[in-house]
Image (cartoon, rainbow, N blue to C red):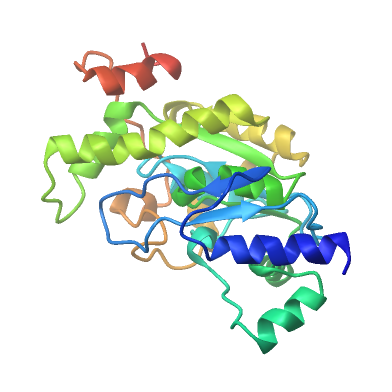
Length: 292
C-alpha cells in the first residue's frame, strides 16, 4: 500500500475517534455563537501525506469578519463589479460530506479522496459553479462563519486571498442588540461578539491579507473599494458605489443582512462610538483595531 493511501486511511480513521493523538495539523472550529443551535464542535485532523487535489478556483477570496460588521454592504459593492462575484453567505463550514463506511468510503480512498478532501472538492466546485453562472472570474465569500475555519480555508486553498473587515466592537454588539426579536442580555451579546473577535484577530495576525474598517467603507467608499480592487488585481469601477442598480439576489434570513438600510441600495453612514465606555474585553479589541 502506498504512503499516500496509508496516510488517507489513517486520517479518516482519526476523524471518527473521540480521542485523537497529536498530528501535524489540526482544524478545530472555534466555539460557535450562542445565537442558534449548531452541530457539536468537530475536530478534523489532516495528514500532510494526503495530496490536495487541483482546484477549479485556485485563488478565491474570503472575508474574515464578525457578524453585524457590514460584510453585506462590502459584498454588494464588490458584486457590483463586472469581474467580481460576491454571492450571499455560502456557509461552507457546515456543508459536509460523510462517505458511508464500506463501499463508498473504500471507493473514494482508492481515488485519494478522504472525507476532508471530499469536502474541499465540493466547496471548490460550488465556488466554480458560481463563477460560471455569473460569467465573472473572481469570487468572494463573506460568510461570518469563515472566522472559525480560516486555517482550513488557507490549507484547502494555499493561494486564497483574505479581506479582514473590522467594525468598532460596540458597533457589532449594539447591532446585535438592535436586531428584531432580540431578547438576549447585554452580557450574552458581548460573549457572542467576542467569539468572533478572537479568531478574527488571530487570523489577521497570521495571514497575509487586506484589513478594512466598516466605518471607512461608509465614509470613503471610493478609496476603500479602490484598495480592495488593487489587492484583487482588478480595475476599479465607479458603478460599484451604486450597488442598488445591480442584482444581488434576494436578501434572505441567515444569508446576510436584510435590513432596510442594505435594501435601500445606498451606502448609509456608520454610527460612531468614540465616547462609549467599553468593557475590558471589548476595549482590548477596540485598541487592537485602532479605535482607541
